[in-house]
Image (tube, rainbow, N blue to C red):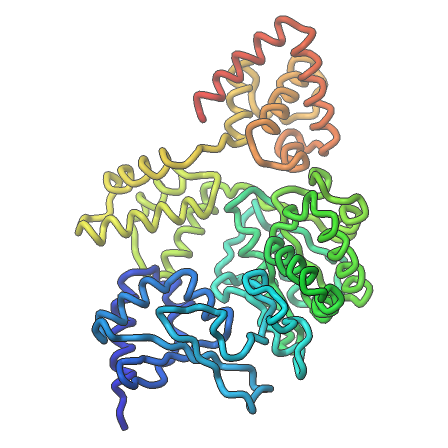
Amino acid sequence: MDNTHELIWSKCLNVIKDNIPQNSFNTWFAPIKPVKLINNVLTIQVPSQFFYEWLEEHYIELLRKTIKKELGVDGRLEYSIVMDSAYNHTQPYTIHAPTLNRKALKNPPVTMPLDLNKDSGKSVPNPFIIPGLKKLNIHPQLIESYNFENFVQGDCNRLARSAGIAVGQNPGKTSFNPLLIYSSSGLGKTHLAHAIGIEVKNNFPDKTVLYVSCEQFTNQFIDAVKNSNQNDFIHFYQMIDVLIVDDIHSLANKPKTQDVFFHIFNQLHQNSKQIIITSDQPPVEMKGIEPRLLSRFKWGLSADLQIPDLETRIAILRKKMYNDGVEMPANVVELIASSIDTNIREMEGAMISILAQSSMNKKEINTDLANSVIQKFVKSTPREITIEHIQNTVGEYFNIPVDKINSSTRKREIVQARQLAMFFSKAYTKHSLAAIGSKLGKKDHATVLHACKTVKNLYDTDRDFKKHFDELENMLKVKM
């Protein structure tokens, strides 16, 4: 039996593996199967339309160069996309690379409502009402590596992670419906949302789970309006058992999209379907969202992800190293974790850069190499001031211990220091008012709002206070 196609694809994988991280390789290339090689055209089998589109968006140049390297300038690549088992009567359809124009697909995708905004017009069939479409045919759009096993727990995320596991084990049946996860960028809310979806699929294979970004949802709705398919759009989303919408704050100032999401939300919630949403803010701070939607966001649990402490950041890096099958000296790992403390993605990016520099330049991984990479990385990235830094700066300025600032004492000088810390935390960090209050004396968001108003009033009326404020602000800006 001729296995040339397997040998060629094996050589391609060897090249690809040297050019991307191990976890990316495991997620996007390990599942691919070579099918045939005819006339310098290699056909590979991928599990879904979503899988194909991800390769097209992120790895097409790497694939194109690799195929040309192994098959020559006339080498071409074709994808065979496997349809769901319910479609045994339908032959897998093929996309020809390097053109990779999805408008040339012989059959319209039926496994998910993905990027529908790209193909519009009367000639495009309604993607939300397809004869024979069953709930099991809806692709969840979940990234398998974003699971609970790879989500490192710490004090910064314990509540959100625990709630996520509870939802994953009993979707729609807990008091955490909706579950709203909020945090600054790069702290893991998208990872956690995917992890919940994966947990549901593992525990309840028959349940229909769908992850969709808010931007994607909005673009789909716009397309549905253009094609007069709004009702089909709504009915499609009302079929979902677990709906995950990422970056829900993007609905701001989009009244029509908010209205349709409101109706979908109500129907799902009334039928005990699980809703999971993520945001960079808690409901109380969202602007441009209708009150009736905000009130529903508060029906369940709002859980925030805070900046992880040093020990948790080290654990995150070690977990990534283990998953990627790489090693790095402990002092280098600690250096990365202590140098980049506000964004997990940036921290992991720095680690990857160090590994790449070591590999490409044949250099030993040590603190000198790490420092050179981190300095360049940090310089190109705006630094974020942390609440801890603000606390320490205010404490040093007034010669008041941080634990006193965070105490319940009502002494005037300590209250004023605490109010200034709250004001600067709101001004210079992306934390919610609730998170700031929690860090500064376990106060609620209303106390933080009151503190900010008090600081503004004193700044305008008290000359000594204004002097303290300006000097503190200058000290904080040195950090930026």
